Amino acid sequence: MVMFGHFVLLVLFGGAMSAEVQRPRGVPLSKRQFYEEDKPFTCLDGSRTIPFDRVNDDYCDCVDGSDEPGTAACPNGNFHCTNAGFRPAFIPSSRVNDGICDCCDTTDEYNSGIDCQNTCRELGRKEKEELEKIAEIAKEGFMFKKQLIQEAKQGLEDKKSKLGDVQNSKKDLEAKVEALRTVKETAEQPEKEAKERHLKAWEEQKAVIRMEKDKARMADVFLELDDDDDSFVSVAELQSHSELDPDSDASFTEAEAQGLLGGVDKVDTVAFETVWNNIKEKYVSESTADVPPPGETAQEEIRDTSSDNDSENYPDEDIPEEEDDEDMDEDDEDMDEGDYKAPPTSRTDDKKDDDEEGAMPPYEQETQTLIDAAQKARDEFNEAEKALREVEDQIRNLEKEISFDFGPSSEFAYLYSQCYELTTGEYVYRLCPFNRVSQKPKFGGSETNLGTWGKWAGPEDNIYSVMKYEHGTGCWQGPNRSTTVKLTCGKETIVTSTSEPSRCEYLMEFTSPAICQDPTSSDSGHPDHEEL
Image (cartoon, rainbow, N blue to C red; front, top):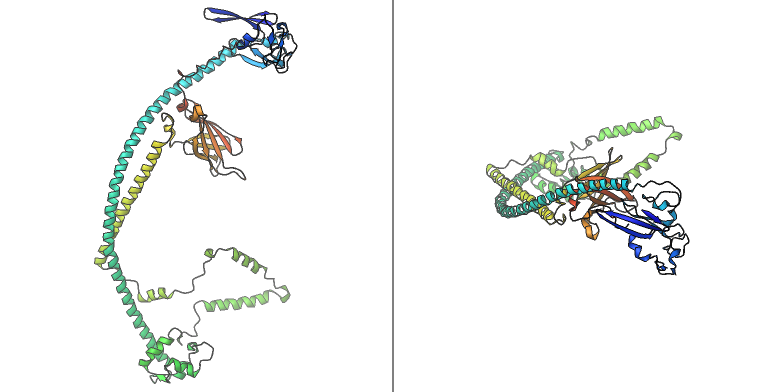
């Protein structure tokens, strides 16, 4: 490189070819035509024209700073670093001759007196090595991608073939289910009729038993009421049972008792049947009238003892206020109705009747045979119906997978139904492509949904480079969590990093061979040295 005043003479080597390009210092080759030594210089913004000898004279004449590309005179100027052997670059012209080496070829410090070392070749060598590594990864990744495309193509054909088979089996199962439904319904009809006959016979038998017990009780009551053993129940004898008072006004009059006897003064056993129907619900046997219900005596004793103890334990002035009762009432109000279960007091009449009448007898052999046949038909029908549901699920899943957008050549299909994890110092992140992203504390805790599959969200010319997962678990007083997954070329399929650049919005880096491009059709990756 040869310096001529405020000009630079460049000698470019390219194989056997060489060329000399002379231009003012700090001017890129692409703008050389605007700087012609034998013509006045027009500011690049067109604001004014000046003599050419005022270019790089360390005085700013142009508003856009274009007359001082090689000095620090203009605050808004730009200095072009040639950086032969590495990449050309622009720096603010204020850094020219500031004592700091900014250009790797040292051209920005031509008059500062500082000793700069030209590091362009070393930087170019390192960049070349790095680019070669990237190119090798891209090459190998693209080879894997071609395999993935072939596997996806074969997998798609297999799924379509399987879908056809499953759809055919569905038709067979549908026919089988309908046939078994007919068998089931045919078997259930005689079963239903036989069970109804059995139940009807049992109800009739229970009615006979109840009638016989009612008659026996009526006879016992007649004898109990017949105090004078004259084989008649009189008005006076009936009045001895005050619980039979029709209006329950504590005054069981003679007229009321006579009314119960049918308007006569006394009845015999035959006429008593009519009287019995009117009094049996109220009648209390003399043998049980004075016997308290089970447990009542014990409760009364406890209450009496508690009352005595209360009087003994607390003097009149020291009896505690019943604050706890209010608290208990509040607690009771908070209880749901469904939470409270009253203790059982007595068996229902139906239950007592069942106990007294015994359990329903087992089915006759003929009826049991019909029941067994119907149950077998039900089991076979249910099994076939379950198999049909499973086949329908299979069809839905296959149709979804076949129609899913796995890339232009289905290269991303291998990610389906897979999950990949990255463990950080605090969390375990889990990415299940086309499904969801989650986060779980490393040392225990519940999983947080960071978003479910939304769409491909890359730029228009590379839409498959970004995945978007949306509608995750809501943040406290914030939006629902979401995750953006950026895909980069790599030989391996791994999550390389995660971050949260904005609150509740996560960023995940993910390498995959499926995103690798054909290296023969893309930029070679070498530095562009045209702009010298």
